[in-house]
Image 1 (cartoon, rainbow, N blue to C red):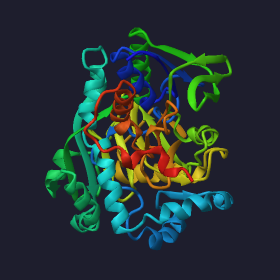
Image 2: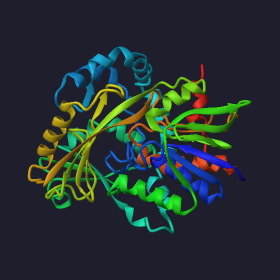
Image 3: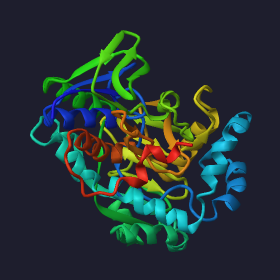
Length: 412
């Protein structure tokens, strides 16, 4: 197949799509206003979390949410002034907080995330980027067996997807993770991994894409030109770029572009926070989810990154103080002996569709393709998504049912 493909967005999804399209022999341009790996693809826990197919909207969320929001120690925050704008999305989001929908969403997310490590390895195979993908256990630390048992519903869904943890208890916990405090049980999952510098990784992938003949343009996309219902060009702040296909992979910023195409996607920002503890000592030796605080501590090249807050508050407001304060309290409790040279704060926007499923596929027969909406599992599912979209554009068959991710599901 021949033709020019324009990809809007240079995060992990967009760059992965570009690499696979170049390998299929297509002419590809990636457009991004900031540059590769500068946004949400930089700010995450770095975990290739193959087990992360269970949505936040589990049964009981509606009943528990008020207490979560009122607790200073629970990692869920809401900017109350934003609630009127949030309400329509929130109603649709909470409507999925039941057993039937949770199981459906988990089944549909599983094909996107469960083979994350192998997908990343395929993406970097034969390049000088292979060292970025670090295989490791992914651990969930609980204060005791009762706390682990309280998560039985979530673990049952993970088991349905093929993930059964090794349980480490008692004195064995300290042998396994000696710097953890007050932890009675670790649920360790094999066949996982992490990226030691997510932003640097995506930037490196973009360099590989360019070396393979792809083009990267720093510009802002303003509109699509659909002459006769078919994409013919992308209009940018640096002029018109003709194309035969376009891929929209700009995360939460995809919503206004989708409106131009006649689809109002119920998409909100899941505002995420992290703190990098530079040159940290006495921290985790592998990615570890501290279950009591719902945050992940990951050893990275720069230090230990601790991430995991959810704040609902839109795109316009700046960072809040309370989420960062909570991360610091949680880290002190989990790793009381950890020291660091400096701390770096980050807040970014993760794209959250109301049904917790990404949008992957073509909009009608327009030649415009969607590849966004991965909530907090974009790094995990990005390479698989990019490979799927590239394959569809290149006319390659897939054995996956892509109907659950169809962007047309939001057309009214």
